[in-house]
Image 1: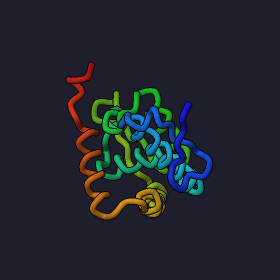
Image 2: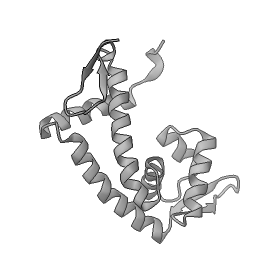
Image 3: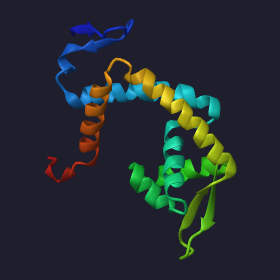
Image 4: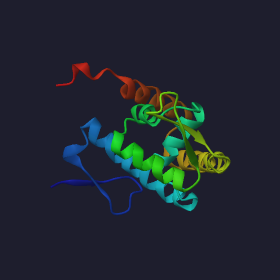
Length: 157
């Protein structure tokens, strides 16, 4: 197995045979970002996924948990667990929906403060993570990733 050292990576090799695969590189970059974000968010007692849930609920108060899961592409069982955890931490509250089969989600005051603090941390994490790129390269990367994230999956094998 041939390995090439990543710049400034210490002992982590980037395997040459996989460098041509965009999906592999996206996954490795995502793992690196997730690791940095999780380390920062641990001080607020939330995970990156929980940060995502709080953001969605903040942007659309009263959204039901099924829609939060669809927005974040998180399965039903997992989103229920995430909402349960956030509710136990008093960051989120469930209220009965109009049809009594659903719950509307709202941030608590504590959840609003936590989200603000987490957002401040995430700005720092993004700056650190994207530091090797110029501002123009960051803009191009964001545009390309947005296109990939919303692309129609109907052409997949």
